[in-house]
Length: 124
Image (cartoon, rainbow, N blue to C red):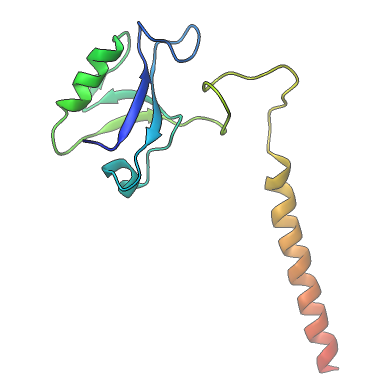
């Protein structure tokens, strides 16, 4: 197989008012995992040029099963990791960068600056 599971379709909407097909799970050591480009939560728009719009779940599964050895996927990357269905945003959640995305690099720069300062002072 291709090494991933999908959810969604016209008969099993994963995101309300959206019948798209989404990657629900990447199987460890499977083809998608080893390739490294596909991520859980990605929306799959097409397989080998075939549009997945308005397909039932089982029809999408069948397309993947018959995709062949060389598979081309057109995907839409999710914007940020979330718990629950992709695209759902609870009340009060803000958009933008997570705090850790700002703090971690800042702390790393501060630690490097302190280390350089201490090395410089030892040489004097």
